[in-house]
Amino acid sequence: MMGGVVFICFALLVFLGLPIGVAIGVPTLLPTLMDPKFAGNTSAIIRYLASALDNITTLALPLFMLSGAIMARGGLSKKLFDVFAYIVGKRTAGLPCAVIITCIFYGAISGSGPATTAAVGAMCIPLLIRLGYNKNFAAAMVAVAGSLGVVIPPSLIFVMFGVTTGESVGDLFIAGIIPGILIGLSLMIWAYIYCKRNGEDKAKIEANYAALKARGFWKVFKDGFWALLTPVIILGGIYSGIVTPTEAACLSVFYALIVSLFIYKTMRIRDIRKFLMEAINSYTPMCLLLAFAIAFSRVLTLLKAPQMLSAFLGSAFGSATTFLIAVNIAMFIIGMFMDTGSVLTILAPLLIVTVKDLGISPIHFAVMMTCNLAVGLSTPPFGLDLFVVAPLVESEASVVGKYAIPFILCFVVALVLIIFIPQISLCLL
Image (cartoon, rainbow, N blue to C red; front, side, top):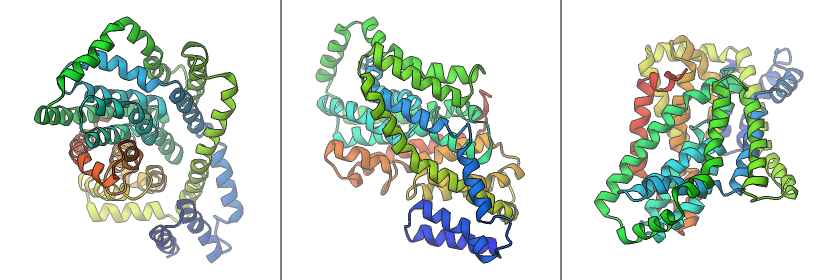
């Protein structure tokens, strides 16, 4: 009974459009207000909040944010793009494909979809427009490819999933590599089809490629080498067992500082304080949301809500396949309207019991859930990445969204493969 009241209260607050922290916080306190003898009383909730914040894995979030901000200041998106443009820029759809590859690699630096979209978009979209590509096509491509920032490790969303469910963040990072590459390849297919169908300004592309080639491959590669090395250090350290994800996040901050201060020389020591403040400002809302989400999930556990939900879903769908189909349809719709991190912190602890009861790998489910929610970042009408790129081309988000639809369909095809072929996510584990 009480569990049903908590769910109704939460759904009502979300429907009314209140901040997600309020929508989680009020239902968390509701059971103890209804029953002062309830085990999850105010004192217990305070302990839940403290333990959620006093967690070594949680530290990875601000550290990855900080290293991403420092690397963004270093102009890494341009250096990465030049390397890939040199390799494939002369081919049909070569430059659009180079942009998508840049999004994949930059996602491994920033760990955030909107951050990847903003950094790569600000650099690549003006260049693509100068070379004759339709501005809305260029913006839509970056918006959808930028959402890979939440899939490609070190993904902040994977960190949040690990914190809220207790799954290994290192395993989640490794599991996201192949799905991220698969999605990137699917986006390149539509970019190639579009360029074949609509043509390209070969003269401008040749001139751009000639200017890049005049610098020489080794010069271009040397400029981009330290940026290319970033994901190798982070993922290599985790995969080899040398460092934990949190230690890798700390390592990435020092690496970003060394590269930006002494190699690229794109920042000064006095700038460090500014970046620390930016990381704190970005992390604090997410930190509070994560803490309340964990407290909410523990209150729900005391109410046996996950077990009741598992029993209901098990009887309603009966098999893992029907469950996955239903959950993915629901998340696809929810992801259009709610922030990716908010959806994951709410749903992951609730669904993880059902996932395990149905024999689904929690790691596979995390990758599937993250990829699904990533689609929502660029899906009209409310996809956040669309609003990030629209001002860059002085266009409406709805117009960019129309050009994004073919890319989204390619993304969904890759998502279907990821859902029903678990080994795509699990083959590296």
